[in-house]
Length: 175
Image 1 (cartoon, one colour):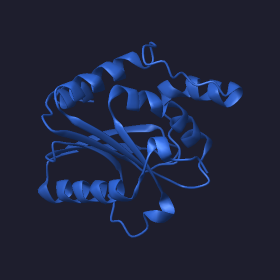
Image 2 (image 1 turned 45 degrees about the vertical axis):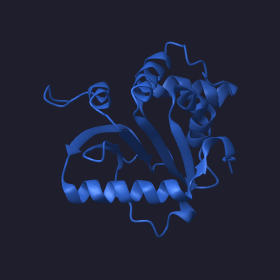
Image 3 (image 1 turned 135 degrees about the vertical axis):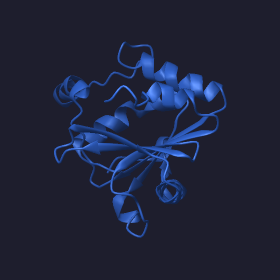
Image 4 (image 1 turned 60 degrees about the vertical axis):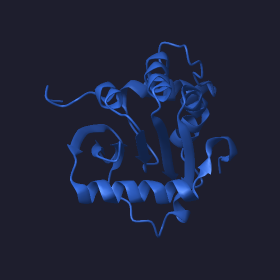
């Protein structure tokens, strides 16, 4: 990341209204998650303590934004039956909700007629997109930013269409 690119914390700190996140992959290979994911696969145990070293920074960041009046929403488009990774994500999503995020899940088969961009993204205040790029096996491949009005319109429209069809986290049953 170049020094001119804002951090996620800076982006969220600059929000006044909304931050929305659309995730569309069934597997991520994020290096800093690999140990926890491996442990869960072996033991079925997932860190769900919002005060843990793993979660506390995220909880503080999100709860601070929500306290300032920023609505933080996350939607996940998933294939069913879900992958082990998505089961692991689902098992930890209660912490996201505890922090103040609203989270919904949409089975991929119900998203077929929704125009979505080719990459996961965060959209801040309906004005700035942070594209999240991943390799084929789910490893982090960097980020890219744009405030191009047509891309913003696509992301906002896609997110709202997914959100309208998706199931709230507390009602979504893993299949």
